[in-house]
Image 1 (cartoon, helix red, strand yellow):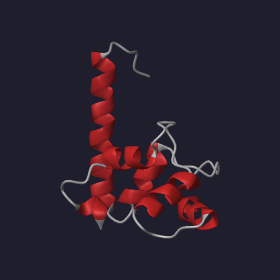
Image 2: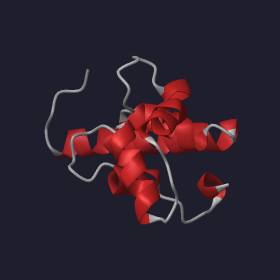
Image 3: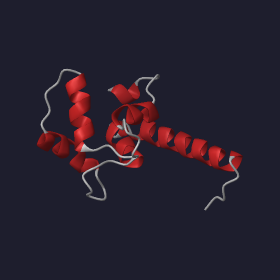
Image 4: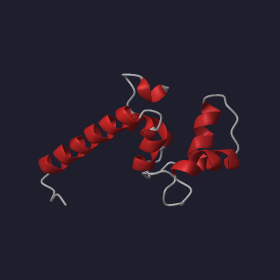
Amino acid sequence: MLAERLDFDPEQAFLRLDRDRKGLITPKDVVLFMKENRQECADDEARMFLRPYDDDCDESLTYTEFLYCVLSSSVVYRDKVIKRLCEKDLRLRKRNGKTLV
């Protein structure tokens, strides 16, 4: 699986799909990505693909929802990556002087 590769960067994968930097991956994003990779994917297929990971049922994936999508096969690996990304976010907030909640 892609997420088990040592060089896999979930943030870069998310950004590759979220081209207009709206912070969400929509079915349209999935269709465009698949088309660029020479794979057919209809809008309804893209919605069906996203649905199990779309916790708030808005037909799009936030970065957190995306992490559960791409890292779901390995709980241990997923938890390590999520912890690392949370720690990175905390360091960035501290460095930028933002108040931590």
